[in-house]
Length: 226
Image 1 (cartoon, rainbow, N blue to C red):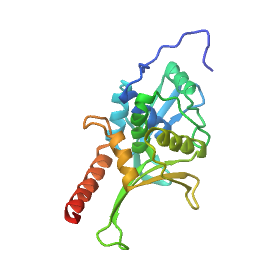
Image 2 (cartoon, rainbow, N blue to C red; image 1 turned 60 degrees about the vertical axis):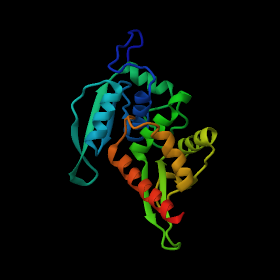
Image 3 (cartoon, rainbow, N blue to C red; image 1 turned 90 degrees about the horizontal axis):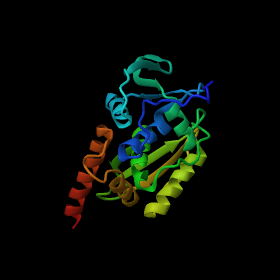
Image 4 (cartoon, rainbow, N blue to C red; image 1 turned 30 degrees about the vertical axis):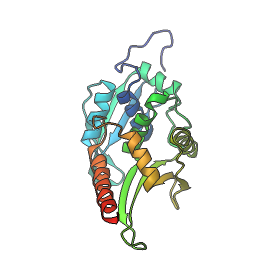
């Protein structure tokens, strides 16, 4: 139990910025707060994401490796550190130690919402594209966000609607314990433009490159069509 009479010192500089908001998004999706009121961690399969997380929080912690599920060969990068002050800050903005199915809204400054959203996307989101066989020369692409908490995914949807007026499609994934918020084509493009508002934003490059390739296909298709 934390001694409330001692003012804690922190490893993380608590100051809102685009990078800080991005890291908060990663914590909400791929992070974990332990019940000791001090420690937290991030687990990811991407070394780039592990490094980005540390860079955005200004910490320097050894990237450990851990097995996932029943596969002992599948290793994930694991960052764990203690910081009472930062832990308490996370509690104050709505992130708890039992967050996966219970988290609701997160207190993010308006100016950094889409940095936070990019962190959520790099954590639990996905992008995919394909040629729709039902329509001649129809190239489709989607941006998706996922959460085990219905309250959080609803909050996320409402925040996006209020900011850029796109609502997507919200559903519970069949035979799964999580919810999915999906944006198609025009709406997806609006989300993409807001998340990647310049080329220097911190992000997971493999997802960004996948998006860029799909948008290049879309651009070529529009040239052909017109």
